[in-house]
Amino acid sequence: MLLKRSEDLHLDLKGHEGIKSVLAELNNGEEFSNLKRVDVIIRMEEYSTSFEPVPLFNKQTSLWISNLRRLIINGCGNLEHLLSPSVARRLEQLQCFEIKDCMRLREIIFTKEIVEEEEREDVICFPQLNSLHIKGIPDLIFFCSGNFNIEFPLLKELNIEDCPNLKEFISRSSSESGMHTLFNEKVAVPSLETMTISELSNVKMIFHTDLPPNSFQHLRELSVSGCEILKNLFPASIAKHLLQLEDLSISDCGVEEIVSEGKGLEDQPVRFEFPKVSSLEVTSLKELKCFYKGQHTIVWPMLKKLTTDGSALLMIMGLEDVRIQERKRNGEAALVVEEVIPNLEQLELPHLSDEGQFPLNFFHHVKVLKVNGGFGDGFPIFPFLRKICNPESLDLECFSFRDGLPCTGDVGTPSRIKKLNLSNLRNLQRMWRKDSELGHILSNLQTLRVMFCHDLINIGASSLSFKNLTTLKVSNCEMMTNLATPLIVESLVQLTTMEVSNCTKMTEIVAHEGDYRQTIVVGKLKCLKLSKLQSLTSFCGGSYTFNFPYLEEVVVEVCPKLKIFSEGVLNTPQLQSVKPDSFDMKGCWAGDLNTTLQLLNIKKVRS
Image (cartoon, rainbow, N blue to C red; front, top):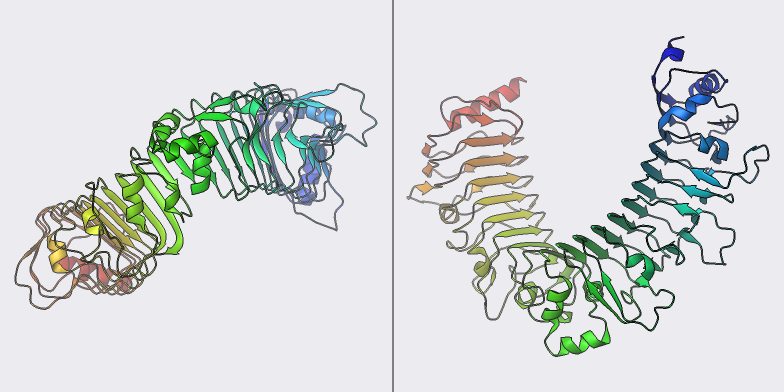
């Protein structure tokens, strides 16, 4: 009785018997006249050989399904088919539809064996559907296999992932052999804004060449990855009308060209302009030969962030074109960049291996540069930087260095680098040496972050190297036994934040180097965080005098051997607490830093 009076119904159904009994009650023909909103989540075991497939919806499904707003199916047992056309048409209020991990499902809407259908309309419409997610369905071939046109007038978000046998969203019986496309004229998504296509290893084309040019005109975000036999991303007719596109990503696919030639455009110069694209990723396309086979120009006027391989980068800007190559030889390539991507701010280059392909001052206006060396040995990274750009922020990842970061030759233009992130650098034992150009970079540095540099002993550098550094963060450096020498620490005159974590062999932050009679003043340090340093016994093992006039936050987390901060004189006039973790708002205080650490250790032992 209560169920029949309800306006809202939320069901989370689990297990074979529970799903079977509840659906039987709902589908027994009873009318629920007050029901306005229904949400259903179904979770069923896969490959349950002892159970017959449970039809989730059948011809006796009562009117409750017309009020279904959200349908989430996570596992559908042994079912091979989900909806009949008549049931699909009754999902008039459905707004969110998710189907995941259904191992035997072959089609969402199945029609071939349905003979009792009274209606023979060739259109199935989901008038309110806003979000459709299909994921982890290995046997799925079609969304719908019958001779139907499927309309999604309000669909804004579409995700299709890990469906290796999917050929077409809607089957097209007249498809030429080998010419299946994911989207043909039988599916309409006029409002689509976000689309993710991933791990569809049976799809050769996403968009049919005969689609109306404005079919995807509202698309803002498109991500395509892991499609092994995909030949291209767009036909020219679609690419020229993506005027709302803001975020475009394609990676790990077999594409030979980004845009395929359109009918009637073979001998005509084509201009591709993507007026709103601000983020573009084109990576790991091993078969990529060109952006577009025909004569063309490309403009990305609002592009801010670009992630791409070196070879694809030239294609994105049209530099593979014969006419552009002539301009490249004439030293005009930098002008081409200004024309094609005038507002680029961040450039990410994964798997960089050949710096010779980039002309001089290629990206002189880039502010953020992230480079992955793929653990190549001896790549001349700093000459490369001098050659193509002078960024404000630099990330170096997966390089192999010996005897410090290598640089030779003229220093040239003063470095603008204010932020430096070093991650996964092999064979790097010292960050600086006398003949290294890194000192030139460090002089203007404000933020330094070092991660997973397992051969690094410490950040030792000249006493002038870090004069402008305000933030220092070091983590996961296995061989590091101390962070820096007293001379280096005293030179950190602008440092406000220091964080050290997960360095398993670190025994002290400041190295003990015998007698050091001067007071070590860390004049602007406000925040010190020490976390998960299993071997740390003290901040400094020597009897040095430390002065921290502005230190106000100290966090000591999972440092089991840390019993004392320093054996020397400590001056911390602003410090009022020590926190055992970052989430502790009050912390603990026993009058001075050393006594407080001892108190925290006593509390840990007792707990």
